[in-house]
Amino acid sequence: MEMYRSHVLVCGGTGCTSSGSVPVQEALNKEIKKHNLDKEIKVVQTGCLGLCELGPIIIVYPEGSMYCQVTPEDIPELVEEHLVKGRILERLLYKEKATDEKARSITEIDFYKKQKRIALRNCGIINPEVIEEYIARDGYQALGKVLTEMTPEEVIEMVKKSGLRGRGGAGFPTGLKWEFTRKAKGDQKYVVCNADEGDPGAFMDRSALEGDPHSVLEAMAIAGYAVGANQGYIYIRAEYPIAVKRLEIAIEQAKKMGLLGKNIFGSGFNFDIELRLGAGAFVCGEETALIASIEGKRGEPRPKPPFPANEGLWGKPTLINNVETLANIPPIILNGPEWFASIGTENSKGTKVFALAGKVNNTGLVEIPMGTTLRELVYEIGGGIPEGKKFKAAQTGGPSGGCIPAEHLDVPIDFESLKKVGSIMGSGGMIIMDEDTCMVDIAKFFLEFTQDESCGKCPPCRIGTKRMLEILERITLGKGEKEDIKKLETLAKNIQNSALCALGQTAPNPVLSTLRYFRDEYEAHINDKKCPAGVCQALLSFRIKEEVCKGCGLCARECPVDAIKGEKRSPYQIDQEKCIKCGNCLEKCPFDAIVRE
Image (cartoon, rainbow, N blue to C red):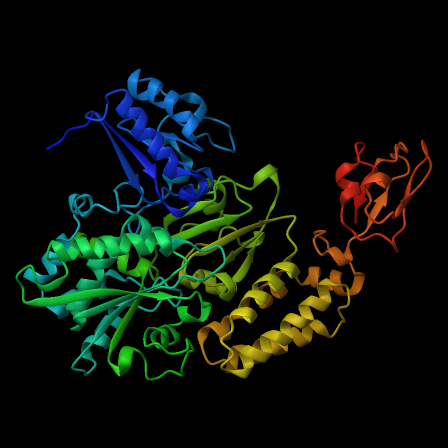
């Protein structure tokens, strides 16, 4: 066995890769070899480490020193200082944005302190392309235990006792879904992993598959044994090339070791897995549309019942779970259902992975116990709002979710509590908004997305969301009417009650939640023709403060439409008829004499 005095972990998730982690790792290997340290130092490419915007990220163990935004040019100094001389390179160390204090070890970083990693237990720790590293972290032990010590019914009972609920959005009890599929009659059954992650700002499933693909393969095999299936499919969008590549490697490795295929662990159980690539249609995240896509048909939902557990893929009983749900299965089997059920709240057990994005200092991937408050997530894990601005709202559940205002910052993050305040858990997108956000514009943004992604099969979603979007566009252009709010609410309720699938039924949620908590902003847009946040361009106006203006004329020279006139050393004025509201004058004025209203 090779023994190393240091392990250098280089993040190889999509975020860090896009920031240049590949050339950083190449430079690191080259520099280590140059110093003849390749027998003492091991460089490990990992999955996502969580703090995505600070990539490329390197962690040096055993010290746990976390270096951020590392470039290839930094590598000679980093190797010389830390790996040769044993001195931490202070200038590249992670530092807390709120306090500007540097953390000398990853254990000191606030972002990680309140997290509890179960689904992401191996992400950022192992090389996802080396099956031996997964096995060293108890990988495939759960599958071995299930196949050699447990009956299918015992496996299902364990999952039921754990209280695990689906992490794809609906929160349906996972054990019950497995039980329904087990009891369904059919000579052939299937297990499908839903990795079609389409919410704006969401990257939970992608990161889990990039960092720990074997956990999903192992869980699918366990599920196959429990429900009586011998074939699995992972439906993943083609826009995830790193995840696809690592899944292909993992499947091949598992087959070579006899962990997939025929007679696994000598038990007589056969199970195989194939990939199916999606073309990026949001609606294919809905399970019946996903099934249609795998079958080679147009990705459209169908009415339920029958549910996939009874009539799914090719008309056969099919179990469908999302990536995060499956990633929880092996540790539940190994640690017991009571262990998992002890985490979280009474009705929401375990942890939840979120893609934390938007106006928050620490954007990235987090996993927190259910019941953690929104305030803890935003201010302790997320590090607060940039530039000391005020928190305004958090959008959870993506286009199907709702906006949670500041008055509910102390709401526990669990299925029931989020529903009470007009939002949903969803698959785990969490977008934070500050005081400069226009909530009418946000509602329009999400409705644009769902309207564009509508499969068009049912009129309520195809036509209803279009009419709602037209109203919102009128409002943001300053052409809104008093009756528009009532029209929006009526349309929203009709769509909720009559759309074919859950994606259509939940499409109005962002509009309804913003109307519930930020109705005054809608009224300001309609009645006063003003955007309180100063976002909606058609409702903006720029004014020069005469008492402040020095008459330098810079604003007039920068105006692209000649809308500013005046004489030197006298206050200038803006012709509101000509002004195109580009903001050049505001940006260029050296005396802060121009205000946006």
